[in-house]
Image 1 (spheres, rainbow, N blue to C red):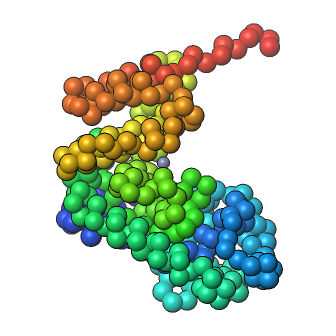
Image 2: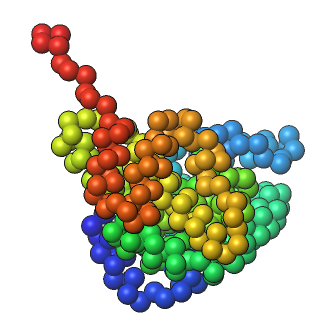
Image 3: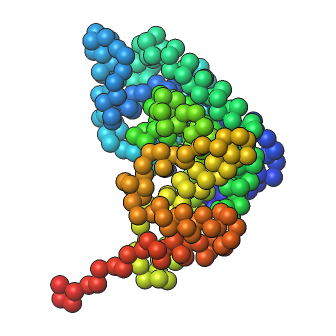
Length: 316
Ligand SMILES: [Zn+2]
């Protein structure tokens, strides 16, 4: 993570515009890879006839055997493959190995004929909408995120737009300083103005983490000081709240008065972030408003949400 931050800092000085910061693309091989992964891991419903499904099954089975239920955002092998495919041109790069190259090359003709035209059209539509939003707001939002996290926002972000992008519809990896977001063009949660919020949310994962980068380590040390256990998802809820609120503000100053951030719209405060909404709206909002320091806001958040550890029963 230190290397990533140093690289981001170096690039931050030279980056000046949205088009330099965000590299959005619709890449055939990434789309095929993500579609096979979704078929293997999520039984994704694909527009194939029974006969076509037969020839596709061998590729899906190969993916299931090789990747099982490995999470694409937490798996070195899947990260390396997705990065290599993202940087590929017309063909499959050698670096992914002959076995996987064989699976992709075998599945490519059917995918290209049956699914790619519609997928590519959806991706390109999503990209053109996102580019418009970024052109007007990107540098303002990047500066705000940098200020809030006390860390430079990534100066370069590769964004691969695909029909599928893991179980949550988007994920980000940052291997060897390559900040790489994969996002779904078909997931309703990432469409419209939400595309803007979620692009910033996703790229923030390169500088905010549970145990490294910004926020997470501060929460851990505050919890230790207070003698409590912080909610496991608190760092991620802070990330959601921040990009949601900063995006809402950027949109409001541009005439959009009714934007509802992703976490509210997807009812995350009733599920993964249960119990965190009010503390975030009180303490983290005060920091975003400039009436409380980041350190005090995080300490207050931990005090409001932390639970005392269960005491050890002697001899138990
Ligand atoms: Zn996230």
